[in-house]
Image (tube, rainbow, N blue to C red; front, side, top):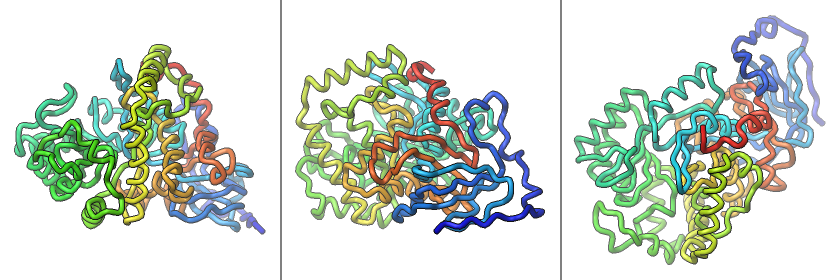
Length: 467
């Protein structure tokens, strides 16, 4: 039976200061808990390590740090008590492909207001932006969040996309390896944390960018096509985005340094247990290269998926909602068998990667034609990873501790363990019983401060796609 041991106040508790928890008055409506000592009682904990859920747990937070967890925890006198009965506590989600810009079929817009709020309200306490549309906007947003001038997740900012040949106007189009080094040096000095290579980069440009980034203490990931996964590993990449959907390893006719328009046809017949795929996995694992799952954005291209959620439509501006529903209808009319088959294969690929020892993380990628919103799309990933065959503890680990490991912050956050930042998500219900309960976020703790999810969401309804 759970037993709580209450302590008389001693000097250590008397000297606790609430200054570390203080926020400007303008955010008061969004904050439920800001006490220096907080106790979450009688809660089910899924800790992010892959361990099975533990019921009847008590979690002690002091000055933004987890100080105790278990059935018997010493509780300081005067601590704020949060009743966790019938609720689940998981680590804050770590979004590894979480842009602050957003697209539909008709627009691309920087969401400096709604994206950070919606991420945090959905339980995402850390993001890597993974390709910037407006790098200076993201660097300023990161500074403002760190200084408590804005509310949002901890941010790792990726520099502008680096690609070769033709590309979108907001991408850096490289002119050879030395140009890649120049671009990396510039943005590293400006303060970005990661770089992202894109579709048309060459092997030499990627190798030069990775080498220069590593000299500057920065890592590089990629949404690739012209360079295959195995080629990227050989070039020194640190992470690979989107998994199955962007891997040209299996296109036997692929020209070097070119992106074949029909390479996805080659993905339909690959055997996940075959030597081709397993060789990719072995080389990635040997080099310590993780992979980011972004199922929520690719699901949009499968006819009649995902199920329509009213909360998603309510968050969108009227114009964005119209654009999204029209494109969704067009895709349903096309009834593409290719994307249905690719979808089934993609789930198998991610499961096989983990079974081969791969480090899989997750992110929403709120692009495409607009149906995968910041935060809400991360929650959808939680459901889709279950569809791929992962257990609840495995999915929580993929979406928390694994991302922290890729970012190199797993000693600080990513799991519910004593000594780590109190980045936590309190969910109404028994999450292990139904993946859809991931939508029932009640309170999100970022460094021990509890934010009211419903209040934040209400403040941005009808504005996603506008600000």
